Image 1 (cartoon, rainbow, N blue to C red):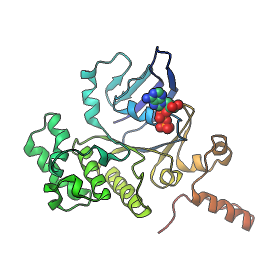
Image 2 (image 1 turned 90 degrees about the vertical axis):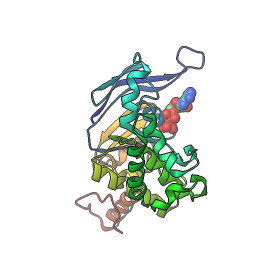
Image 3 (image 1 turned 135 degrees about the horizontal axis):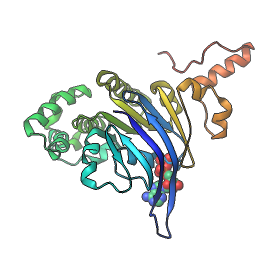
Image 4 (image 1 turned 45 degrees about the vertical axis):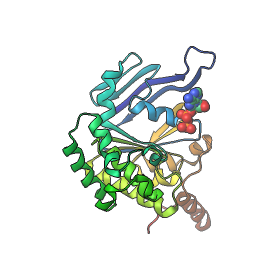
Length: 274
Ligand code: ADP
C-alpha cells in the first residue's frame, strides 16, 4: 500500500492559547513494500507523523493518502476504521498495553474487535506466536508471567494478528540489551521480506536506520528536510552536521580509516558483518 503525505501540517490544541505547531508542510512518499526509516532528534515531529499514519491524528492541513484512503481534517472517524486495520503500530514499550488474562486473549482481542471470528483469530494467534519465536505453551499463560522480551513479542504478535499491510515501529528496541535489539530488528526485517510488509521505523538510532531501512527521511523542527537511500543520507557528512546528526558508527570508522590511509574507499559500508 503506497503512502503519501502531501503538505501535511499539524498543530496540537489548535485554536487555543496552548496551540503548538508540530508539523509544517511535510511531504513524504513511502512506496508499497519499502522499509522507510524516519529519523531526527527528540521534538522533531516523528511521533506526530507516526500518529497520522493510522489516523490517530488527522492533519490540520494537507492530505495523507494510504492506499485508496484519503485522510484530511474533515474525515469522520467511521471512514478511518479501514486505515486503522491496515496500518499496525508497534508503540514504544508495546508490552505496557497487554491487559488480558492470557496471551491468547490478548492476541485475539484486536481482530475480534474488528469482526474476525474467534476461530479465525485463534488460528492466527497459533501461527503468530511461533512466528515471533515463542512456544505455543505461552498462549495459555498470563502475559504478566513472561519476561520483558517475551511480553514484547506477544505485543508484536497482537499487532500482526490484524494482518496489517503496513507496520509502523516506534523505537521498537527501546529498553532492550544489544542482543535483544538485534533479535527484534531481525524479526521485523524477516517479516518485512516474507510478507512484503511496508515497514516504517521511527528511530533516533542511526545504526538501525543504516542497517535495516532502504529509504530514510530526516525530520527537523517539524519539517521533513531530507529523503534518500542510506548511502545518500549517511554519505553526506555536511548535511547530517547541519541537522546535528551523527553518522552511524560504521561510517565514522570508515571515515577514520580513509583519513589514515589517505584515500577514499569506493563505496560507503553501511552494515557491520557479524
Ligand atoms: P519526536 O517524536 O520527534 O520527539 P514529537 O512529534 O513528539 O517529536 O513532537 C513534535 C513537537 O510537538 C514538539 O515540539 C513537542 O513538544 C510537541 N508536542 C508533542 N506532543 C504534544 C502534545 N500532546 N501537546 C502539545 N505539544 C506536543
